[in-house]
Length: 115
Image (cartoon, rainbow, N blue to C red; front, side, top):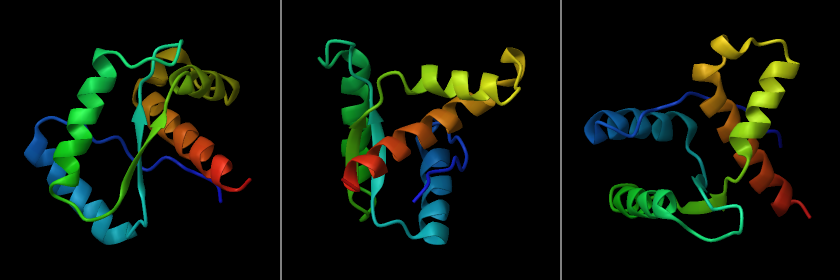
């Protein structure tokens, strides 16, 4: 399997996020949702990771699809490099970096499962 970016959905406002997210769940019917967990370079969890954990708790309360957090260290850096290598100028990358980083994250998870 190869991961590909779908779209970036801002988490706020929550109601708008949830409406679009549920639409995607109905359309795609995933077996699992992988959520990036921002770890510090030493592997520890900081304030950003705590916000993600709170988000996951909130999301688990309103959907039935299983959720799994996955280390997202350096996914944005890798996404920026990939976009640059594909010929995208830095000023044009803004909206694409998050979606590409999500695909990098998902591919990392999928690769870990195939071994």
